Each structure stands twice: as C-alpha cells, then as structure tokens.
Length: 454
Ligand SMILES: [Zn+2]
Image 1 (cartoon, rainbow, N blue to C red):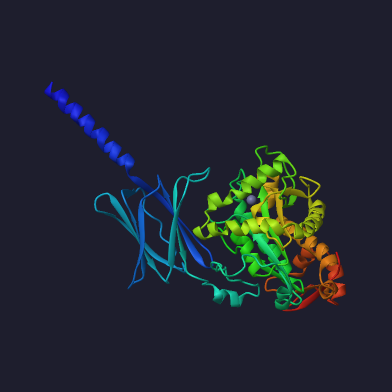
Image 2: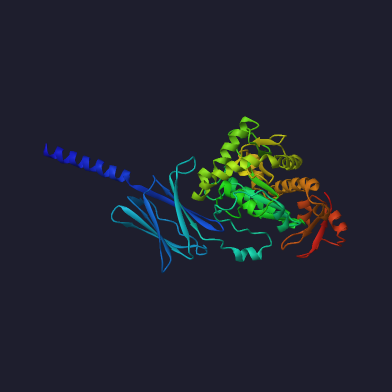
C-alpha cells in the first residue's frame, strides 16, 4: 500500500512537472535577414512569449528577456562580416527565464511583434532592428541607383501626393523602372518540387532585368529589394514612389496543385474583382505574403493611405493594362502563356495611384519543366528580356520623344562578352559587329555599342 502511494505520488510529480514544462515557451530557432536599413531577427517559439527588450551601452548590446522560456537548441551565430550583429549569447535566468544578449556593431532602434503560425512556420517573435542605410559605400561603387528605404512618413505630409511636374523636374529625361522581386527573407514564396524557392529565382530575374534597364540610355532601374530580406507590400509601393518611378513591375513565379499547369501570366490591379477564380485565389495567396514575411508595426498606419490610394487608382489602370499587354506578348514569343489576355486581380502590391503597376507570374514553379527553367540562368535571362522588351514596346509610344529617339546603346561592363550581349538583345553577332564596325569579337569595358532593333 505504502509502495503504491509512493508510486502514485511519483506519477503525480511526473504529470505536474510535465504540465510545468508544457507551459514553458520553447525557443527552437533563430533566423536573421538583413535589409539595407534594418535587420530582422525571427525567433521560432512554441507559443507567444512574454518578453522584454532593452538596449545597453558600453559595449552596445541588445537584451531580450523571455519570461518562462527555455532554449531548445543552440542559437546560430551571425557571420563575422554581418554589418550589425556581432555575437549572440543566451543563458537561463531566474530559473525559468531566458536571456538573450546580442552584441551590436552599430546603434539600433528595436521593435518587436509576434506572428501567428502559418503553413511554413509556427509561432514567431520578430525583432526588427532599424539602423538606417548602411550600404552607402557599396552604393557608390555600383552604378545602379540605391535608394534609401524611407522612414516613417510624417503626418503633415500628404500620404501619397499625386506625381506632378515635380517628378519630371528631378528626372527630366530618365524613365525610372521600379523592379520588385516578390517575397524575400522569411517569406520564401512558392516552392518547387526540387525545393526551388520563388524568392530566389525571382530576384535572379529581377537582377538581370535591372542590368538591361541600366544599360538602356534614358532609363534607370530601382530595385525594391536588393537581397534576401522581406519588404512589406505597402512599403514596396512607398519605395517606388520615393524613387519617382514611372513604372512598377513585380516579378513572381506561380504555383498550383496540379503539376501540369504551366505558362506565364501578367496581371494588373482590379478594384472591382478578379477576372477569374484562379486570379482571385492567386491574389489572396500573394497578398498573404505579409503574414509569412511579417509586416512591421509601421505598416499598420498605412491603412488610411491604402483607402486613399484606391480612390485615385483608376487614372493609371489604362497604362498598366497597356504595358501588361506588351509584356505578355513578349512572353508569348519565348514560351507558353498560361492566359492569353491580361488578367485582373486585387494584388496589394499594385495599388499605387499614379504609377502604372503590373505583376508578372513568369512561370509555374510547381511545374517540373518550368521549375528547371526558373533555375537556369539562360532562361532567367530570356524571361527578363521578355519583360524588358515589353517595357520598350510600351515606352515606344508613351515615353517622351528624347527617350524614344535614343535608340539602344549598351555600355560594356566587366566580364561581358559580345556573344552574351547578342543573346541579351536577340541580335546576331554578325549584325552587332557590322553596325559597330568591329573586326572581331573583342570588346572593352566602358565601350558603348549600338544595338540594332532585334
Ligand atoms: Zn509570388
């Protein structure tokens, strides 16, 4: 009997300690993503942790105290070259708490929020460290435009002033093309069966397009995201606006449960409703990116602006439809189209009132053949070119005369070959040589080639 009592007591103790353990929050993982003006830390946690964040000086460090929490695995360290984070340490505190200390290389402004579980991840605690632009050194080195990601817009400024003469004052001749690679960072986008991540392939296509735009006289690219980090959907529009973009192109790769579905599609915004059930589904899926990538608290104040945006959107819908049609036509030349007409759907990212904005679903990552293409640099180049040709076709009619007359010029960058340039513009090597009076295939960095119409 006594033995039984002890045994029961032991069982009770077991279940009690089990309950205690279950109540404790478990920290499973830490990921970090570095944008030009901020670094995002994402803690994978078993449930929402009660936490406290503060900064300490000399040396500069960030402290995160998790109440009733334990660490499940060791936390990964940032690379030595990380611009902001130095070393991450953690230790249990007051028996049931966890303290994480992060040594910092520069001052930051921390902000945290929790994200609910979704298909990809469980509960997450996101800590955003704002530190201002830190890549100005790199910006000077590259010739492409690096714009400062805007800070919070003051209440006094009109939320989204309609583009006026002011913008042409800043860029009297250059057409600014905002290139938006979808997803990024915590948000991988759609996944292929070989594990291809949409965020990676669309950034590769975006970078190829950036180069083409950069090499075209009178045009200037602006990359909405330049690396593997997430940018909120409304923030993407803000970046394009700050750069006074004349055109906004969001690049994505589609996914569908049926692997046989393939082809490209081009979308413009519709306020009234999606053109098909599939379009509605896709828009819902893409708009949910913020749930995965994680919006910042700043984005919430943008609600009103979005309402205002909707009111004036119609003004640019015709232009969006026009450029979308041109790009779709060029995609038709390189491969299959998923839909032969421009599609409409309520994509959040296309809601700028005054910038013609389109979204290109380049191919289906869920289709094995197209997944292979999305991974191939050569095919990425073809897709970028189809978009670029569409842009040129569009501006052929709507751009200021001085740009229309400029013709295509290409300035040779380091590592480029004549055959690559021929492929890029779809002209033969022979024609390229003859137009530029070249005896052989030798070209020099900085040399400017005339490119004949393909
Ligand atoms: Zn996408």
